[in-house]
Length: 377
Ligand code: XIL
Image (cartoon, rainbow, N blue to C red):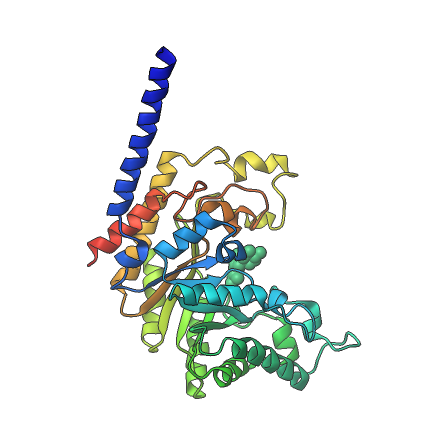
């Protein structure tokens, strides 16, 4: 009898908690509604989300976001793995998912020096291609990929990460084969391939003055040459203390002055200690690094959770103040479990950079964003 009563009480409590959660959920607006008057709110998705294999995440994306970016499936490595062989299926699913949900669909990314197979820059004898041959290959790739989704993908990251931190272009295979005007050529071909698509330049650390200025020159140059460029995406792989509010504002103002849109395209806020000096290491085989670089394996302490929420609030407050220039903010992932930061710059950490936790629940950072949006109306 005692057992029966205890069981009933426990059940009642569970039902009550569920009801309270539902009620609370019903009263919290979705991100896309809270931010409707400001800018698009997007998210990077992988194939599990799009195909419904990770159905809880699919439900979050459909409810909360009005724009999507493919985390990987449109990168050269995946969509064009071999010369003359394209793998369109996952990208087709991605675009169909966005259309079904009436989302603003972003293509990421056409021209980048990473996640591209080595053969792309070489001929059949394994020699580096010359300028003309490489330009022909670039044009063919852009026309094939953009052509397939013409009129369906709303905007493209045409070139990704061409600048280095000190300003000039990276010494990439693109520069080596085509030359420094590969960026212009990519924008030229992209506009030809789909004249109605928005075209963006996308990069990280654009909040750093030298890189920001180099990017300003690059955009000006494209415009002076009469090429179409609609916006600049700053990736937004940020941390609790970086970048400053002032640097974010200066970045926005610099591009507002050029009349292009600004987007934060890959937002996540890292709360873990910086590990860039151990790039590529695996935490599981470097035990001495574990305690220092992977401190929150068993959960995020409340005070760090709060810092993360405050930081998200701060960032969204700045972006909302500049909503005339900022056209979209895209989170680089839906929930902490699948964030790329669990495995970058070193593998095997437990990271907490996003708005939903490992159990698909909204974090205090989520509430902070909604509250900031409501307060700015
Ligand atoms: C990352 C993905 O999130 C990972 O899954 C993949 O293994 C590597 O690339 N800058 C970009 C994104 O423009 O495409 C990168 O995405 C993160 C850095």
